Amino acid sequence: MRKKKLLLVDNNTNDNANHIYKFFTESGFDVITTDNGRTAFEEVVGDHYDLVITELNLPQIDGLGLLKRIKDIKESLPVILISDNAGVKEAVAAMKLGANDFLIKPLSLKMIEMITSRVSNGLELGEKEKPNGKFRIITKNKEMKHLLQMAREVADSRASIFIQGESGTGKELFARYIHHYSTRRQNTFIAINCAALPETLLESELFGHEKGAFTGAISRKKGKFELANQGTLLLDEISEMDYQLQSKLLRVLQEREIDRIGGMDPVPVDVRFIATTNRNIEEQIAQGKFREDLYYRVNVIPFRLPPLRERIDDIPLLADYFIEKYCKIDKRSVKGLTAEAMASLMQLPWKGNVREFENMIERAVLMCRGDLIDEKTLFTISGSRPTENSGYRFMPALSLKEMERSVIFRALDQTDGNRTHAAEMLGISVRTLRNKLNEYKQKMATS
Image (cartoon, rainbow, N blue to C red):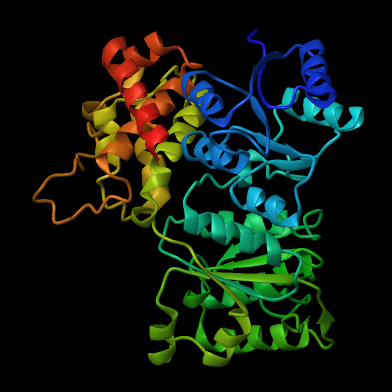
């Protein structure tokens, strides 16, 4: 079993650094030390680490600069900043750049033990409650990160939330993410698709009915609003709801009570309400298909999820995630994609967004007969290989150089920093890989 590896960056040879070194070493870690930011970044580029602890004030590249560079190439690598004289401004700046924690010296033994325990158990530092894999949202995209931060900030509110986005962008997953971060997370989350049920059945499903309310109503039945009491109710594709039923929904949002079909007395409900749509809701209102007053009730806190073509910097992350997922499910041993296959993925329009992307990766994992998915495997069934005449103009969020660097660093990360194995994975010589890494170091030195 590989020992976990810590990079300790501190230019002060004091008791604090010695305590950290001693404790992590005794806890079974391989601890590498350096005293400046530039050398530290070179270590991260060329090797695999499970944690970086760095002093804020460093020569050549300071702690914040080092943090930014690390998160640019290895976003999931936990980084903790430490300082003996930092203020709130520096701490806020560090957290915005992605620091997992910001600690003030001297570190207590209890604090060091906590860090060791979290890293040893594979937990993300600084995050009190991490969504489990089912509700995890994979992203490094700036806009998506902003949306996730906003989602966490409003999670505890009772205000209605309206999520708009194309099909396949993950609207239900985003709603579940909000529920997970709310104080209602221990209670029920119920989702109902308004497009999947006819009007009469949808009304009964939402509001419930009394015994004898209609033919077949042999007993009282609670609706989704009652079942989701003190939890969260998601109305997926609310724009498909019948216009008349929208009036009844509006009353629930105004009065916080429902009327069962055939019932005499209103039933109070405490529900966090989230709605989604893949349509242009303003057009629906203009065409008389959606009530304007209901729109203002549900649109208290709006979110617009970007399509995958607007967040192509997430494609490498998503590819890695889905390859790992389906390798576990289907007991395969695929390690990744060739550089050509990855480049092709980043040129597709992805009209079905993440859902379409996941389906393609699942097929490719099943069809792959080697360690890496190549272009032929990727497009064997779908036949959707991008071409110059496909009618889709690819506008990259990353330059070719940046894309190349991203692929190289990912290969190094997947091979635990082994340059020989990374070069084999990339289909290049070790010498070419070494030249590329030197090129990146020289560019960093002049930046």
